[in-house]
Length: 568
Image (tube, rainbow, N blue to C red; front, side, top):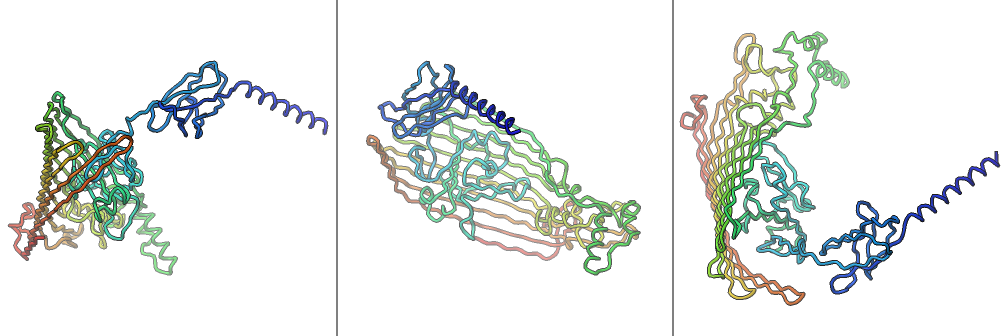
């Protein structure tokens, strides 16, 4: 046995030596040096065999050493930041030297920063940016949702899918305060706007300033980061171009919780009560009734999650734009329409939004540049009068109510067994919360080039918002399926609230900017001042006991008149 083992081991060693020898014989070493146009060595250049993961990098002297298969068909790929990639096919020799050419395509890209722009190569702060192409690839209804996964250090969380309210909470590099941790939103140089009411197709680029170095120009308002949004403008020296896009889709609820049926619910509830020494709530006879379905008024088997959600909800988006211009004038005009249906049962859920934008850019006397950017948004959304997701909301109630409660009694009235509101009745007949808003934005700016490198800039911004909200809490009555008597009612007495809000925001910005390049050195200086005013007005009127539920109007409510107004 010892001789056999030794013979086998010797054979394996010999086989390994043969395989290793063949591997060495089938590969060769390539060396070389990589330099720039001035013959300076380039360090950390990536050298890779095309189509494989076999590669290396150059050292401080620009030299490299790479083991490659012994073949004349190998293609070496050389890549380095700021230089154009280059591919070289291996020749018969074992030395490959080459010169890389500079590529300014990425480093010369302009990134929007606070009160101006910079080349990407000159950025020292933590700034991330995305373009219109990144957003257009996603069928989104709110811009904040479209940022998910694109920007490092930016966290996006959605808390509601309600139509017209499905924006997201944005956090840049975590939460840095116990107060409001939302970043500052700046749209075309005007701070304080709302990004989620903009038309996604109107966006040219989005930059995110993530650290103190990049956002410090905005002072304490930029402590949580800054999001800079730039809208599209017309193309100079271009023929009129008309663009139309649309999409139709359906939303469906996913990952919904699964609940027990009534017999299982009753059995486990009894078991939990026995475990703590209590008398079980349900008898075996009652459990059998629920299992047989012989009394659907008192022992129903309702899956409330399936009842509260629709199977799907439609969504459509249309965008039409025209842009172009001549040598001294360019224009961009767009219209967008968005419609979303709600996933919650009932007719009280849905939203519509209309966006119009006009932007004119002109150049006068080769020194003066004018930019007029006007936008208008008309949006509406509706929901149940109870706040969905809160303790009184339809979805929350659907998670709490017993499966024994029927959606409707066999007599056709709303089902009720005590303890919890019927969420389907609340969503369908409990009233509505209708919201409407019209917002006009005017952004006028001028830039005067006095001499080479020196520019004066002025900007005036106006945001005028007018919104209305009507909340109608309609009384819902529940009647006994046996006697026909009323056994319960919610939202009594009925109430109707009308709320109007008017907000006017204005800002004036003046800046002087100097920018010059001296050889390999760049100098840029900026000094400026801004003034902002914000005036808010509100009016609220409330009445109780609406006389005609079919015509809900504050003028036909007869009790408890309450009015209030405020200005800030």
